[in-house]
Length: 378
Image (cartoon, rainbow, N blue to C red; front, side, top):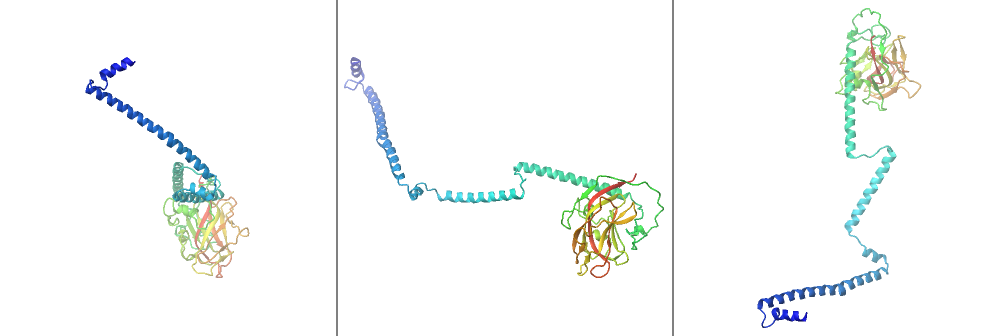
């Protein structure tokens, strides 16, 4: 190896006899190697004498500080930015409100279940489709009912006390009833459906839109209300009017409407030959705009029993709240007791004196609730 080194130095080393290019190459390579070794030595010295000792010194300082354990020092060391503190307080307040709202919902409606927005949209879509289908069914039912009502003409004379020419009413007869009725041929008993065409339930609030007259006037709640008496869909008759007309009683307006005083005072609703009704409630509005005209236990509700040919009492007087109707234009709802029976004619009849001392009947509106049935001829 010594001989090889001497040969290399003699032929390629730095000497007077060496070539300039070879000398330059050797010096460049030596410089690169020396620079690399120097860099490595500096990095190793920094790591050994600075970084290693610094980490040890930091650890020792922290441990010595923690031995003090004062709250002020701990708070200073672990202090967080004020923005983070404010945001935490806001979120905690929101969470408290949310928890309170959830507790209230669970108390008032324990069966309510939270759903996603997509599920809510699907449920709402299904509910809208169901309501649309129900409206279509009600409209079809109303059209069928109207067709049956049109088939009734010419009508048979109504019973006494329902606007007919004979018996206890004594009142004026509508124009279509003034003709002399033709002799009636014996007919078979009508067929009554067991299932109701529609059910009208009282919501507990007088003046709602769930009654039969409103349903009929809006064609099953599909259009703006129109007076069903003027449209020929039902008839309202009386023993005789002193103020207003019978038609105004089903106009759903607070007008001055009074049935005249007399020996037998009544206001009757005729549903038509193809329909009968099992009533549960009746809402009435007082027909006078002046005070001192109260109706206090001086009227009753009756319905015509075709089998017996008489009027039967369907009121609940003595079994619940008193039958009172205050003026001016007071509104009240009265429970009825039909006992499951079904009627075509229902009326309100005076049985005593009103607040003015006579037996006139001030009624500007009434509405009936119950079950509606279809009657078909054999």
